[in-house]
Image 1: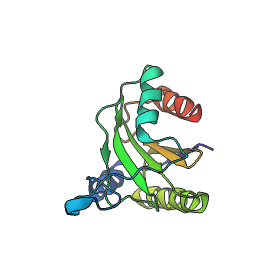
Image 2: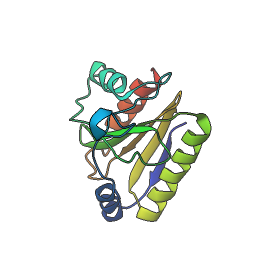
Image 3: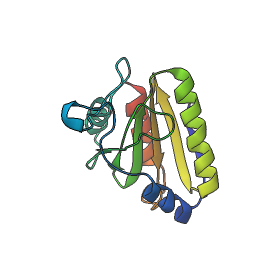
Image 4: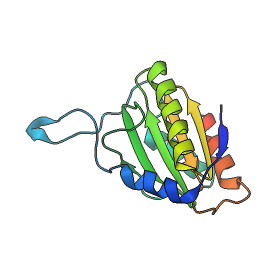
Length: 149
């Protein structure tokens, strides 16, 4: 179920700055961290491919470490000027908890416009923090393509 929430810009920018970038997942040999996607749910590459097929232009996406919102794996990036986060969850209870944490954080940060949508155990969150999508067309396309996965 997608939900729009009216929230403020300045605090959301601080929120994004607080989320560190990097790889996440289990340790690989030699101490390096390897990305660990969750099986049985749409993974970030499939989501990006769906958006490209829908005529959207995703920018580079990068893993977020540690994965926020009780997720097992997350990547963050930009699609046509809209900040997006795609997170994979090991189970439904973790996804429910993560979605609630995200909404609570948006409320505290006074985010202007945000939407969360789940498909299987993958959660999409999209935020138009720079108001580049005033009519919601990009967010709608993001959601519609994501729901088809």
